[in-house]
Each structure stands twice: as C-alpha cells, then as structure tokens.
Image 1 (cartoon, rainbow, N blue to C red):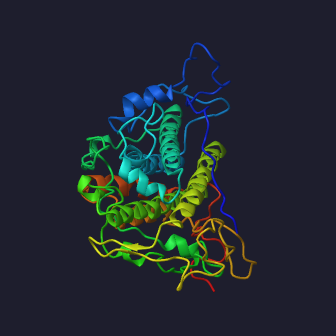
Image 2 (image 1 turned 45 degrees about the vertical axis):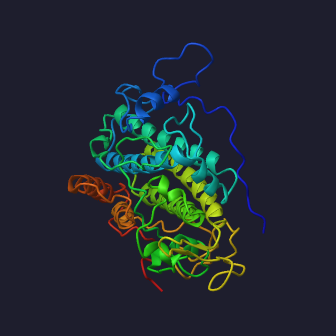
Length: 401
C-alpha cells in the first residue's frame, strides 16, 4: 500500500474573514474583518487567547436569539481546548516549522528541524500549517460566541510555564509543557484494530511502551539536547508521536460533543472544524510511522521497529493511514471504518484527564486545573433537546457484548 502524501499548501491563506457576507476583495478591507497577519503579529507573540470585541455583528444572519446554555458551554470548552492545542503547536513551529508572517514567532532550530525531517522532508510545512489552523479555530469560536452574546475564553493569565531555552524559541509564558511528556501511543493500535472499539470499553497496547513509562522532551530543552544525534532524533520521534496523539484527540472530541448540541448552526460549526482535526491526525500518524528505531543513549528510551513483531503484518505496516473497519454502536452490526471513540458521555472531562495524565500541563497552577475542569464539566452537562437522558453511547452501550 502506498502512502498518501499531503502536498505543500500554496498561497491563498493570507486572511481570515469572520464576518457574514461576500469574501474580501482586493482593496480596502470591509468592516468586520480581521487581518490574520495583523492578529498574529499583535496577539501571537503575547500568547493570544482572546479576540477583539465586535469582530462579528451581534447576531449572525438567519439566527434568532442567543445560544443555549449547553451550546455555549460546548463552544467555550472547545475554544479552551483549541487555545491549549495552539500553544503547543506554536512551540513546535518556533523550533521546527516555518516562521513567517502567517505564523510569526521564533527563529527556528536547524538541527532539530533536520531531525524532524527524517520523519518527512515536508515536516516544517506541516507544522506551520497545523499551527495556523489551530489559531483560526479558537479565534473563530471566540468570535462566534461573542456574536451571539456568549462569553469568549481567555487563558492568558495561566501563561506561566517556561519556554525552551534552545536556540529558536521565544522566551514567553506558555500554557503547555512539551519538555516533560508521557506520550500515549495506543492510538496506533486502536486505529488498526478490526474487532475492538474504546466505546465498548476495549483497551489497546502501546506502540512505543517506553513513552508512557517516564517523562520525555518533545522539543529540545536547551542546546545541550542537540547532541548526541540519537538523543536529538529520539526527541524528534517523540514529537512525531505526540503530534498524532494530540490530533487524534481532537478528531474524537468534535463528533463526541456534536451529539449534545441543540442549534443547527452550532452543529455546523462543530461538523466543519472537526474534520480538519481528522486531516491533521491522518498526516501525523503517517509521519510517526517513519520514526527510525533507536535507543536514546541519555535515558534508555526505546523506539522499536514497528514493522516487526509484536507488530508488523498487514494491519500494522507503518504506511497505513486509513482506519481499519471495526465494531460500531452494537456488535451485531457489520464492522465499519470510523473515528474512535465517539461516545459522548464524559467526553470533555475525559479529554482533560487524558491530557493531564500525559504531562502536557506539568507545572500549571491549581486554579488552572479548576478552570479547565469546570469548563469540561459544563460541556459534559449539555444536553441536546432531543436527548432523553441516555448515556449517548448508542444501543450497544459501553462494554456491551
């Protein structure tokens, strides 16, 4: 099976227009639009977590009334999740992505970039584009919230974690910690299983067991991490698996929470953003499969040959990027190629718990965790008006056989 390659994106993503009406033409900028370059220059360097009030009209065309409490809670949690995701991607882009007017900040690190390019020669472009996408997600959701009388999310007060001291990184406060990660790699085996689904309570082995047995850097912490070469490559390999781990989480989160949305336009927002997370995940799982087998000489972390036992074979060859068909809703149905999991019960809190356990927030304050937990609790409490109080897991239910 041949790998699917993502072509480098060309021009045409210069501006984010977030108003109703016709696209911006050349010339004067219509009222109600934001130049993404302007926004990123002024907001990104400070770790932008908010957007300016008034960027959208107070009520979008065709909408009547404001958001339901549940829909607002779901959008607020997703905004927070996208802000956190953006913070992590920004750190990657500063060191190994393309630093330009679309995603400014940082100056790059040539040795780390070279190590990432072992996974794919286009890694710098992928990192850049993924970072740009995540910025547009939270800026749009926050603007949409304000347009309908909702409260946007800002996590700026929690930008207290240190930056990498390696050449290329900005020295600004961070929300996430990429220097002490325990990367969960069960997504690798989950998407290759033909008879298991986490929505049924099934569990999956780690592709790289060592990554969950300690805390490891996914970016160089200082220039001392740039040698020896196998150590630097281990850091790049860790990044490859971590990028896929983050994006598979977003791939599941949007359809999980969409089942609790009431308003059809809010549903449209989730169904339009969610698939881009799946596009990201497909890209990153392909790149992770190219991580060279090695042992980090500084800490003993082992990256195995994933084309050899206990993996390998048709279902585990490393160039597979399509989900294998598996059980869905009820075991009596034929298998189906799906995103997994998509069970809605406790989806937001599950995402917070998962990310916390991976070390992404190591060093954050108790207040940060309290705020994030409350946002997740409120999102999980949302109910679609047609929901009769079921667990949202489908007729099969969790663990049904």
